[in-house]
Amino acid sequence: MTRATKQLKVTQVRSVIDRPKDQKDTVRRLGLHRIRDTVIKDDRPEIRGMIAKVRHLVTIEEWAEERAEEREGTP
Image 1: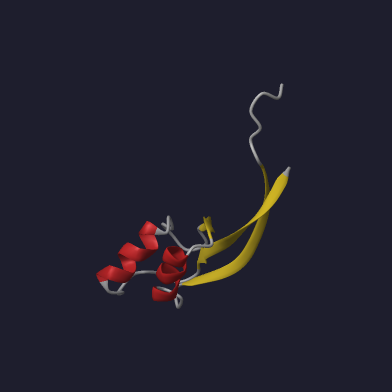
Image 2: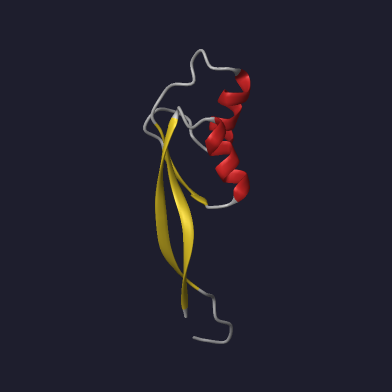
């Protein structure tokens, strides 16, 4: 049995140089370290809020990935 989970692909496109410290921290907490770094994050309100804070520094794409549920007792 599989289920599709909604995720976001976040890519840093602008530098954090000369940005306020809170924006730098937010970009780092998203897991981005340099321009063109990309991470896949679950689509949750907390992540959406972080992205909204630095939307001028990143691009966002919808990312759907199929995940197989773990089944206990199957070989």
